[in-house]
Image 1 (tube, rainbow, N blue to C red):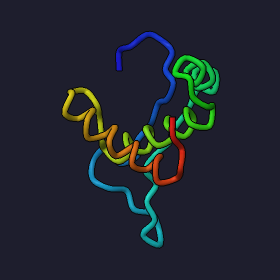
Image 2: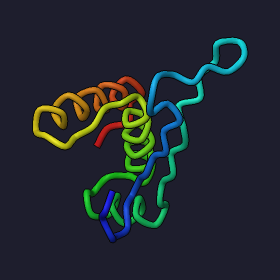
Image 3: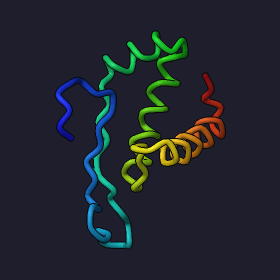
Image 4: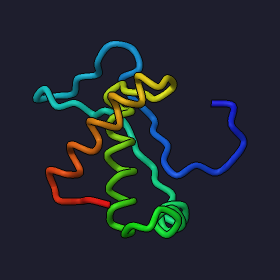
Length: 94
């Protein structure tokens, strides 16, 4: 992405083009890598639990693999609303 700094979560999509289908119609979207050190620091910075931050980053990465992004305010609004809906449905709140 041309950014020379640490990141909290990064994804590597396998479905950049159309879709990749493996046997039995299962999909492999890609990989999500989360920096545990950044997650711990951000949990402290934002004043919520490590579980909340780790869960947020996992869901955030998952939505990136589904094709969502947050380059614009409108994209961010949509993506973050979906993330909060998932986290709230599991009782993972700030």
